[in-house]
Length: 203
Image (cartoon, rainbow, N blue to C red; front, side, top):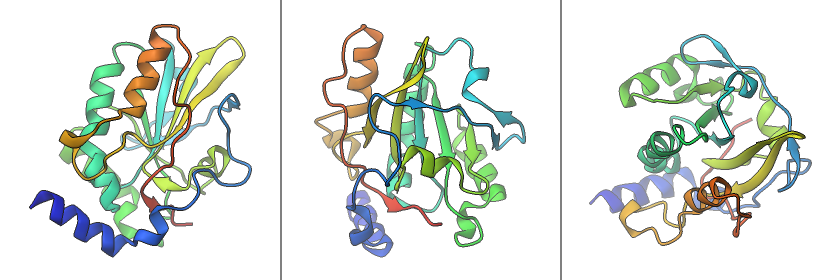
């Protein structure tokens, strides 16, 4: 029943919009240095990557309230933060949609969602929609794993969280977990890029 509900929501969201290209023109590629940002969190405070001084890197996820794909992945995003924040790779969630066009994603609704789901990570609003185009994000959810180095925050992985948005129990490839595990072991990420599956970002 849960799977059928998600599938029905996906149809409403529009399948055609979900399977377009992974990165927008001008967005980051694996190996690029990602610039920092300063965005407002749901608690009203400004958040930058540089403020997370103990981090070894970051799991930056562009996500939102309304998208059924984002909703299907929400518990998995929470689990990623609980697993990896203590190991040095916290989740940093960014809501990229225009809240005028998508009221469900406005700041008040973001605050309500974060409180309801007890987010343990920052949930930032991309006011003016300036950050997501720099990254090349096109979907919600869309993941960019960054590794902190002497040169800056290096993009190590871009794409999907895993290979099954419908059913967490049926996942065979945990792309984000595999990538972060490799980085924590000092190894190269094997799968560096996958296609992000989700709703198109509303600009």
